Length: 111
Image: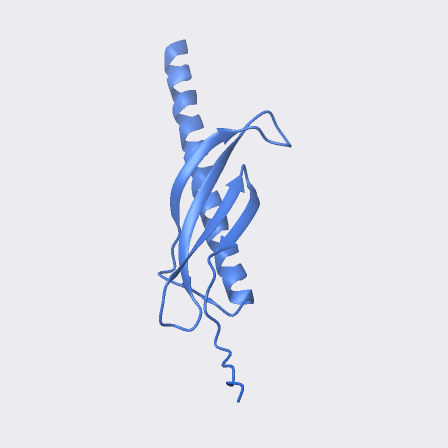
């Protein structure tokens, strides 16, 4: 085994570790979206989230980190889909945003 073989194996191991970490953060984002919508009495639709964008960004904890933007859909009453977005910087959740949605509270008209 030559030094170049060791370097190739190390490079492959780094890519596998990065891919594994990326999958883990995707699962964290799904759980965070599911828990957040569930706490508000909403339903996370399709049991999935989608990575829409990622970029390298300066982090508070390290020199740089990957910023990942995941999108998902939820419903409140069951008749319409609403978009949501969750952002991770590195392994930490940065923000979660929900579009305005309809609630099930019915108001009585004032006479």
